[in-house]
Picture 1 (cartoon, rainbow, N blue to C red):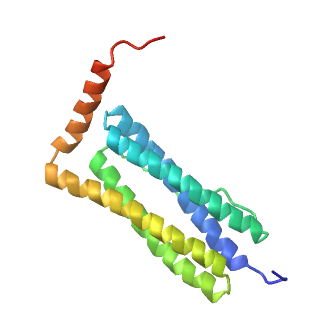
Picture 2 (cartoon, rainbow, N blue to C red; picture 1 turned 45 degrees about the vertical axis):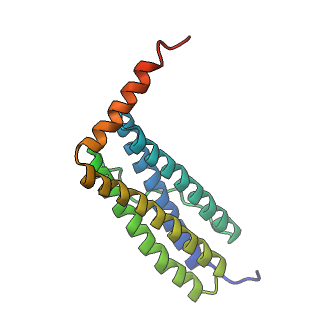
Length: 170
């Protein structure tokens, strides 16, 4: 590795850590509220996505430490107090779209600084963020296609499962 400085890459990687940490917090907030409203499928999507974002933080942090930087566990913003599922999906899709755009730019910046490993990490993250965007976008399309009943069906299905399972054993 030599004595080359990777300060620019470390800065960009830490920006990504901050972005991912906010996403984790936001998606868990959405998960809790969707679960509370009986929207199991949507709640599980947000939870699964938050867990994937945790994996991103791990990969980014490992790279920062390898480059002899320090991981800054800062969140870049506040969790938005959104309780409407439609607005949650819009927010989540927007977050993923913005992250994919940033990570594309940052991949190129790392490449320009002869850091191909960080470049590849950002390129891999772009693919994941685009996949997350697609999942949220599909849910929004389903809402349009099936209307308000789309979420009602999730809540009804949950009620059926709960009522058919009988009393909880202690």
